[in-house]
Structures are given as C-alpha cells and as structure tokens.
Length: 354
Length: 114
Figure 1: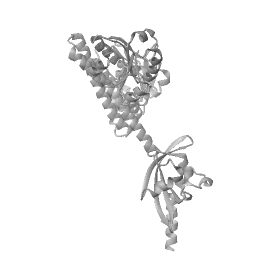
Figure 2 (figure 1 turned 120 degrees about the vertical axis):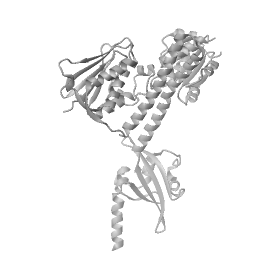
Figure 3 (figure 1 turned 30 degrees about the vertical axis):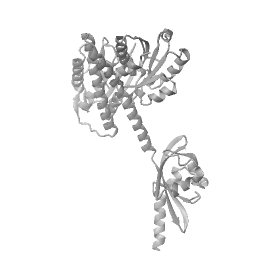
Figure 4 (figure 1 turned 90 degrees about the vertical axis):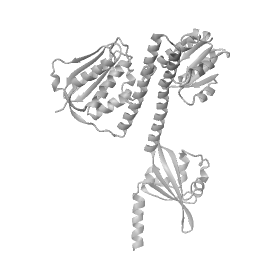
C-alpha cells in the first residue's frame, strides 16, 4: 500500500516538476516524458517516438560531440558517468531556445535506460551573449580615446608651439574626461539594470534645480550661449516634482552636455519650461547635428549612436538610455524630435507633486 | 616621404594623425567616410591607412576591396582597428599590413616607409 502510494506520489512529482524529463531505452526510444518535457520540446504525442527527433533538430553549442546523431546516446550517456551537461540550441517556431541538457545512465530491471533532463536556459544565454557584446564594445570604445591620447602625447613631446601644446593638452584632458564618463555610465547602467539603486525622492522645485545645472554648465563652457525660458504665465514655485535631486541633475547635465557636444560653439542652446496638464515640460533645444527620424525612438536604447555622433567620437551611447531610465523611474516620459532647420528637441514630461 | 590617404570616422583622431604625419614630412589627405568621391586621392596616394569600422559596419573592409580593383599593386594598404581581430581582417582582404589601436606613433611611422 505504502509502495503504491509512493509510486503515485513520485509520478505526480515527475509530472509536476518544472524541469523536462525524458526516460529513454538504450536505443533512444522515449518511454516516458513528463509535462515539462512535452512542452519544452514541443513534442506532439505522436512524435514522441524517439529523443533522436529532438537531437536531430538541435545544435550542440559547445562541442562537436553530436556530429554522428545515431550514436548520440552512447556518447551522451555511456561516455560520461554519472552526468553530462550540454547546452543545446533548438529552433522552434523561428525562435531560438537554449536548453541545458543532462543525461544519466541507469539500470532498470537489468536494462539500460537513460534519463535525460532539459532545462530552458534561453534567458541565461541571451544575458551571456549581451554581456559578451557589451565587453567587446566597451573594449573597442575605450581604445578610441586611448588611441587619441597616444597621438596627443607623441605630439606634445615634440612640439613647443604654444597654441598646439594648449590645443592637444586640452584634447588629452577631454579624452580623460570621456573615459571617466564611460566608466561612470557603465557603473550606472549596471546598477540600473540590476535595479540596484534607490531613488531618494523629495519635493523639488524644478526651475531652481535646472538653473543650478545651467550655471554649472556655463562655468565649464563660458563661451556657450545657453538660455532658459520659463513660461511667464505660470508661477515657478508650483512646478514641484517628487524626485531624486542628484538623479534629476544627472538628467539635465546629460542633455546639456549632449547639446554641447553635438553642436558648434556659436550655436545657442535653449531650455524651455512650461506646464502641460499635471506635468512640467522641459524642452532642451539645440542646433546641432540632429538625429535621423528613423533613429529617434532607438536613440534611447543602450549603445545606439547616430553615424554623426560616432564621427565626433564621444561616448559609449549609454547616456540617453540612463536618462530615459531615470525619467521612467520618476513616472515621466522623454521624447525627441528634430529641430528646424537643424538639431534636436528633447522633451521631458515629469508629473507634478500633488 | 609618402603621400598618405587616412580613412577613419573619428574626425578628431584624423586631425591629430594628419598633423603628426605632416610634421614628419608626409603629404596627408583625410577622409571621414568610405566614399571614394575624390578620384584624385587614388592617383596621388602611395599609402592608404584605413580604419576597419565605420559606424557599426566594417565598411573599411569593403573600401579595401574596392581600392584593390582600382590601384596598382605598388601602393600599400594598411588596416587599423581597435578590434583584436584586425590581423584576420587584414588577411581576409589581403591588406599589406595592419596595426591595432591604440598604437605607438613610432610603430606607425615605421610602417609608412616606402
């Protein structure tokens, strides 16, 4: 009775467990498959004849051990005891699914059996691929300013002409700032992606904070004209938002610094503040190189830069994705459209505190 | 001294490389796109120094392939890139040399001797 009860309980567990399990005989014929295996492998009950059907359509990711499909079980089960683990990639409905496959050899009533388990690790693999891509692009982008710095140093060691020395010393300084910014962006982007940062929200009057950001900016770029316009019909003091001051400053600094980087020094930057329904609207308007329409939505994704921005050779393409992240975490929105005749208008909407 | 055509999408980098190479006595033209809209460059330049990546594309490699059909074998094509696979790219397009960024300028200068 107890044995029967245990068997039924084990069958329930076998059926309910989230890991796909196949029990095959020594030829690979599937004897049993639990619900997760049936779902993961998308096996029709009729097709559940052999695990070979699955392996024949899969691509082992790490090793070429499965070049001979017919011998797969021998290789998978017999050669490694007690477990083998392989990541497999499988195309299903044009989507690539990656499984971690493990096989175990057992003896049941004197017959060789194999238990194959499948665990869907697609998400993990996507993450791994994204990480690899990120490391490659970071290394690549870091080498750009380093190349420039090497050239500047070479030049400075040989030139005594005051004007050139000043120019390339400034260039060297710019490149160091650029690398510092890249590193900070990466730290921030990682924190954001892990949700490992908290917002210290307080009620903040927007106009003075923006004025502070603009003043800091003017101190760094004294020859740049930057003008703030506040809609005269509204009382500045009612434009209060619940926000993390440091993060909001980061947003303003980032937009201003983009406007500065991608426009000529003689071009004025305008910041316009207005009230729109229950939100405050901040427009940052430049006359720079602009963003092609087809990229205006994508520009907020990490690592996306326009061809022209790349020519200027500045940054990793993380700044605007951070800005969007911060604004979204504050319940706001950010969009960009083209300015006429050239440049961009970045518009932020932030909900007013009640 | 050589006549050098520099192709890179970073304009600041182009400017300083041009200045350095000119100081060394080379005649230098700079190009921040891969279009060959100034045919004079093809005739004049002895050495083409080409970055592999333009934007997100390896457009520098297509440029080398195009150049190979239009210039004489006596002219040199050197690839440069921050990518560690620059050696593979160079052999793929049968460039005459390659240099990985960031490089020391004397190393580049030694490659530019005809």
